[in-house]
Image (cartoon, rainbow, N blue to C red; front, side):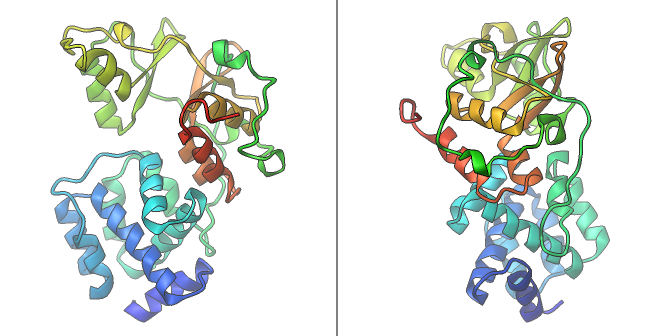
Length: 308
C-alpha cells in the first residue's frame, strides 16, 4: 500500500477532516506502539510500510520496549493527539485496521505476540474502525464495602444519558491474576511486570482481602526502606476493598470510579467470589460511548476534593 492510499484510508474510515489530521493519528499511533515493541520488531514492521510512515516507528522506540498497560497506551495516545481518550482510541483502531491491510499477516502476528492479551481488541476493528463487541463470561466485583456505602451519591462527571445500560459482566476482564497476602512484595512486583499491570487483587482462601498497586509498593515499602524480599504483601496492601457486583450496571461502576478516583475496580459475584476487573481500558475498548471513558478519566484524574 502506497503512502497516499494509506493516509487516505485512515482519513476516510476515521472520518477526519483533513490529510493532516490523518497523518497525525497515524504518527501518534505508531510512535506509541513502537514504545511498546522491541527495536528489532519496529524495524521489521517499518520495512513493510511506506518510508514516510515507517519512520514514525523508528523515531521514539525504546531498545527493549517499555512495559505499560492498555490504559497507559490510551492515555499516551490522547495526550499526543490532543483529543479525548475515546476519540484517540477510535483513531488508533482505524490506523491498526489499515496497517493490517498494508503489511503481511505474519508481521502482524509478530507484533501482537509482543503485546499483552489486553491489547488484542485493538486489532479486531471492523471496516469503520469500531470494535466488534465481545461478550465475556464471569462477573466481577463484590460488595462496595467502605466505598460502596456512598451509593446514593451522584456525580455530574458522566451524565446519566451517556452511560451504558450494559452490565459489568459484559465488559470486564474475567479471571484476573491474584496474589496472596503471604507472598513477598518482590513476588508481587515480578507478577505485575510479567502481566503488565499496576494492580493485583489480594486473595486469601478464596476471599478478596485487599488490593496491591505498584504505588503501594513504592510508598509503603520502598520509601520506608523495607526489603521487598522479606516484606509480605499484607504489610503494603490496601485493605479497604472497593468493588462492585457483576450484575450491576456499568454506570454504577463508573460512579464508584469517579467517587473514589480509581481506574481499576474488582468485580464480584453475589456469593463474594472475585470474577474479574473493570478498568478505564475496558470502558474505552468495549463500549460504544465515545465521550464516556474520556469523562470518567477526567473525573478520576481530578485532585482530591475537586470531585462533587
